[in-house]
Length: 333
Image 1 (spheres, rainbow, N blue to C red):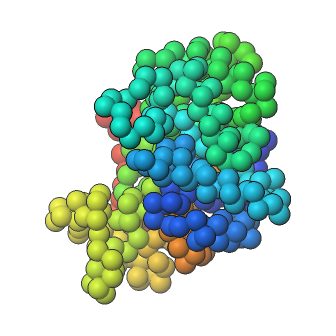
Image 2 (image 1 turned 90 degrees about the vertical axis):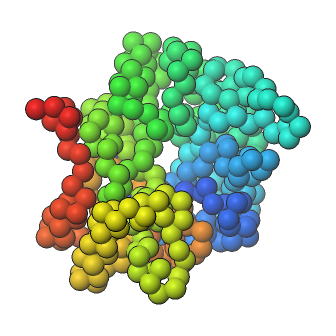
Image 3 (image 1 turned 120 degrees about the horizontal axis):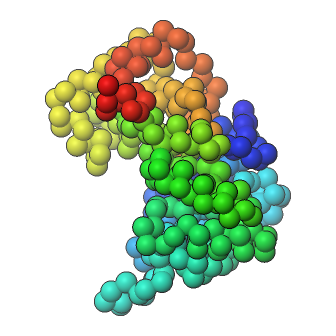
């Protein structure tokens, strides 16, 4: 496994990030633990989760599964760079007629409450990377950074990162952090970024690079669309659903995905592995998040991390998925 620095920090992380969103809802605890063991054995040391994973009445379940895995010992916690997130509502009262205030978003109160709850579920004393899952338009960054400063001083978190932030919010957050002193500001941005969805290249990725944030792409296969979905359907396998199904319903988009699969068949490369390998060639990318439901899916992702794409293939992929180009040229002269 290859490693890189997380943005401008001295922290070394694997070029694949183990996403855990499926742990609980789709993968039971025993299989989740087996996947984490396999990831660690393969050298993946960067694990990503969120306090809301588990969803619905099971919010927090994913963090608990990870915490039970840490509790097994064997230096599991010491070997892992642990990232979780705060923003979503964590009020678990199923009988509540409405959302109880101050159990979500990025107020200093909720950040304090949420980090304590995550530490308890994760059975750890500290979180390496604490990420804001979404922007909070109601809370000023001065308040957010004050809360983060306290947590860093208490040793409960080491770094802060963002997720789903637009470029201007990355800039705003880090400019305010710099004016305040204390915290070093955001060190990473987790964003939607893949071959079929390249809008992040317009402003998010450039902003991240300018401010020294590592870029952590989520949904690297675009909801399965880039994982050989047409071929799988033809072979009687799992049919496309959600975003992938909606995209394939459009004839022009289906033609684009067919061209992608045909290109990779010509080169003898699995589509899903090519999509991951492509992200690893992109400037500013620390590593994509892979969310395996099974051990076999993890093995495929590990193979992708070692895959070298030729310049000819990279050029052909750009022709199929050209991307928007940088701003302001993407929308101006």
